[in-house]
Length: 134
Length: 168
Image (tube, rainbow over all chains, first blue to last red; front, top):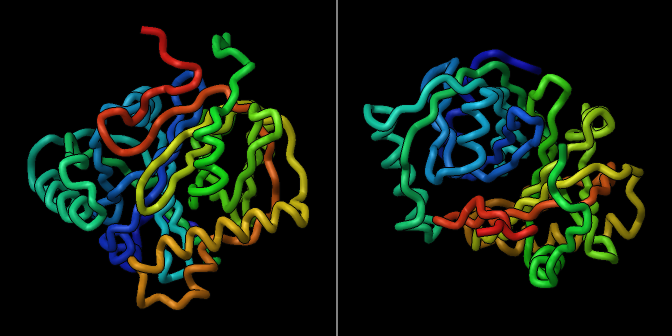
């Protein structure tokens, strides 16, 4: 079932530190896929994604704000599919600080300390959410 | 206009990565309105001439896939080895699609075993059948011509185009 708000049951999945994948599209129509280390729950209608490296993803969402994210819930045998729209980028404040702390924890768990570094918290509006059970 | 040469060959080192080490992948497409869509990829293989790849997609991720590919041909596939995070993205043009064959299912089975082995230490408390289920059964095979390969391993080089090399 497709929803327009992030349901409470997605929060533990987002907080588990499992990587997610993101698809964006440039203004000239080329899709780009990338693995992202964190999808942060802001509120029912917003999620924040970590901006760690200057990348094609960052350029794409500034040209074309639409983004697709798939979050893997391995334990729940499900994929969460999010359609998002880029709104703004924050380099300080409570969301940035909370994501920075989570990124450091994920980096240390995955042997990526010193490589993962949060440059900005990109805030997206949630357009739709769907849980695909497998 | 497309400036990317059409004779891109996947280097042997990356072919070995795809065939022996990589264990998770995901594909991206877009529709006519430039809205991006994602498709889980449960397996892959490299064409004999090393210029094409075939991605195997499970049933639940096929809606809209062929329509998007037939409309604009654009496809991006990211392939990763977990937990080392060595990652490459392959961008190219759709060639054709078909139902999966027996040998495709064998490829997916091999990748599933690699994936479960790599996750075992991290998900020690999760039953094996739950980990196995993450790599779904393939339903559709999508062949595409590889035109660009990008390094996506986390780090300062992430995003660098490897093939064709960026001219300095």
